[in-house]
Image (spheres, chains in turn cyan, orange):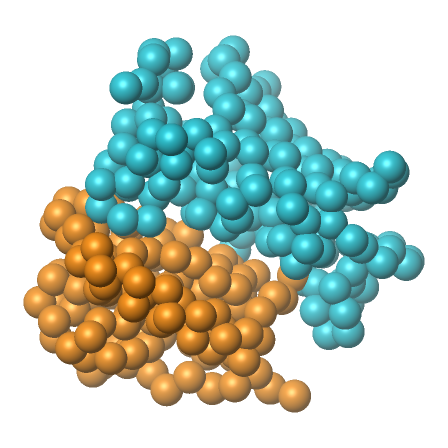
Length: 163
Length: 126
């Protein structure tokens, strides 16, 4: 069963499969809801309702992710495209899956080098990019990077300066 | 969002094995790959990945690299691949939190293959 942070991962996986070079994720958490917007510069072939099960932007027999987003968001989702940018937005009841932010972000930031993640939570916005992680030695793919990644996220959540 | 087929997974593994040769120079010789496709996520792959990451950090396994890949369906997910020079490539299936702890402690740290978790990869059903 997907939690809400998993839905964001599904959306990012969709962007990666569309060949996106840049993926921007924005997640706002508050008032019992998670509102997410994932924008990318990938190439899509949209026909029909992309949220319908069995309809895919990626080829025959693929594409359960958008349908899962549709179901978990109870239909509060939309996919738009213009000026070469595709945006997927959805809103879902906050299930607490972003409470431990490092655990939600570790797999997300490990998905692609061209990803930028902005999180609005507790009246504070934090922004994390792969380039920031690389600069800080905090890419979470090895022991020292994992430790620094968790420290970095913790500092950003508290509004502290890391390093 | 299905994602990568087994052949894709193998291609990634082949590429990463080449990369590993470069990384060997820096002393990092163990590669862990967690399948994070839709079916893997549904089965709890995020918890598996975080557990492995936690343990690699806590155990101070500086020679280990953890990366992610797409779906490993129809194999029993979460699926985790472990490559070490000593044991070669070993694939584990149904890797829940407890299994992830065991993989970190016994295989990544101890160099022992966990035969009860080991699977043979099945290719994607046509």
